[in-house]
Image 1 (spheres, rainbow, N blue to C red):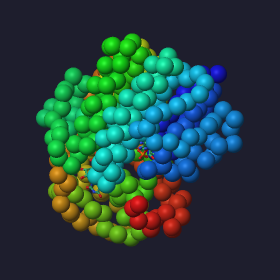
Image 2: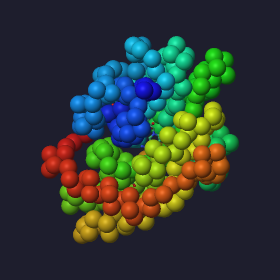
Image 3: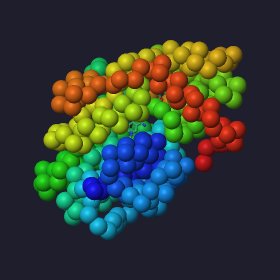
Image 4: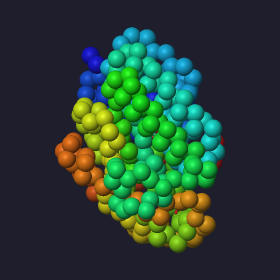
Length: 319
Ligand code: NAD
Ligand code: UDP
């Protein structure tokens, strides 16, 4: 049985990866310090003998006994309000955490895949974003703690690949949504659906003309699974190229939820990217991958998930 270490396993994406690897017949070693994650996302896996969980901060030395075939490094605060609240931990997990895990990969002879992000392109002046684009990031702006940690993470990963011959994979993930997102993590989809469910107005930042391209989580996991098993060591965009303005997205959520609330406008956060859409020709070419789930379908499933949460979850304030 192949054995995979998944960091950030109690988070949104990490928990879906745990499910996928268990389904594929792997033994899963899950690791998380629960700083933004929730054990509820993986508790259904606890009874399985091929599933282990360790509560550990991967910015500190990481020890795993036994063999490891793969490491998936997904630990990191990921939503703007999270990484603005815990900026130093965000920088540490992208840099020190990545270094620790690359060291572990080298020691175990494991292949390591890192979760990078479309944020490495910053506020892009190339559209759509191709992997060759180097980005437009403000290192000292509020988002710099996340963007630069991820850029450093990519550089460190490539160095281990080049200088130590570690097998590495880099996925640049574009905005992904689905069940198990935290309702109060501040990202636009849970923010809008949470507001609709609580009977509050929907807060659009700026004039709503900025764009994003939303990918359903199952599509993302499929792309990542294929990338891990490919032989391609350079960064690969995985995301859904179907682009929408945030203003239009608010209208879609109003329709989906049937809320009587309206849109209100708030200040645009500093350095908020004006547009974002992945060019996925590389993923199509080398992984034979493209998204399958239309936004209408993915949003319906996600809305059902949020509706199933308790009133306590719905009204929980940020930690
Ligand atoms: P999330 O906040 O739901 O999950 C992150 C998990 O990492 C949490 O469970 C958290 O407790 C854990 N974690 C954070 N710091 C840790 C540390 N030092 N040690 C151990 N565990 C730690 O976020 P997510 O959306 O699931 O994102 C997962 C990864 O994917 C992140 O690396 C993020 O940068 C990347 N990513 C996500 C998206 C997206 O749209 N969801 C887009 C681009 C990149
Ligand atoms: N946004 C918004 N209202 C909210 C939360 C976010 O208009 O309540 C906007 C945000 O300014 C950004 C977009 O939605 O332009 C996506 O934000 P998110 O935090 O989900 O992710 P980002 O892509 O910015 O990392």
